Image 1 (cartoon, rainbow, N blue to C red):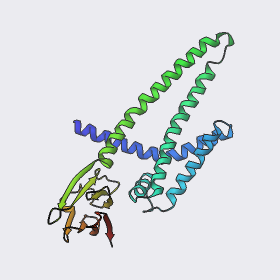
Image 2: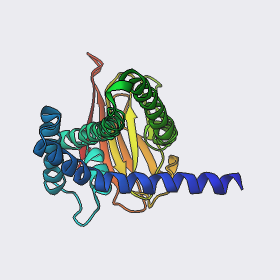
Image 3: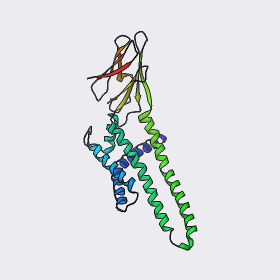
Amino acid sequence: MLDYISSVAYFGSIAVTMMFIQILPLVSLVIALTQLFFKVRVKTSFLTVLTAIFIKVGHDRGVLEKGQIEIGRLIDHIYAPSLLGYTLLLSYIYLFFWFIYSLVWWLRKYIENRFKEGNDRKYKDQAKVNRKRKVLVFFCILAFLPFILFTGYYSHQYYLQKTLIVESHSPRNINKIEVFESGKPTFIGPSTIEARGHSFVYIKRPVFNDGDALSSRNVLVIWQGDYRATIILQGKGQEDEKIQFMISPQTGEETFKVLR
């Protein structure tokens, strides 16, 4: 029963997130244009209009697979990886907080206007406005905090957490290669591997495995001596991909190169 509730909550949050990302630029654009028309918060409204237009243009340019909804395009851009993908992600984060702030701002203005009537009760009404404002801010925090925490937890589990799947040592145990799976596979994207040696140099590559978690069967490491190796990535939904790993015996510099 607990697993069923967790699954419903997880996929429900994904559906809400997908819908929110789908309509957020359009809703923000309408609100920003309305505020510009009434000359309210002109600077941030103008910036929001530019951000919404940038998101629309960014989705239409460099789309990896046409016909996807915005959340699919955004994830494909990030998986690429590309500067456009990370810029789109930052733009969505800005729109999200701008939308929440605008919602609180307009509700606060509405409450203030309701309690501005009656000059003889000015101080009493102001106290009510302050209380309403605090209650409103507290309500917004309570309303969005569980969603943010829930999304953050599953984002860490499915996109950020690293799981070691292969550790291979050279013939004389001088060097080694570690291959991690970043996050977990989902129904909207491939798995991602991260291969590294001793240093901070690493390479990330997508592996299309039909949604299944990766294991040591998906990665084959073949050493050619102690300073050169070939990493072969295998997935159910892709052709084998080869990555060359080299270490300079003199400097210890490590390099990765994708072999086509």
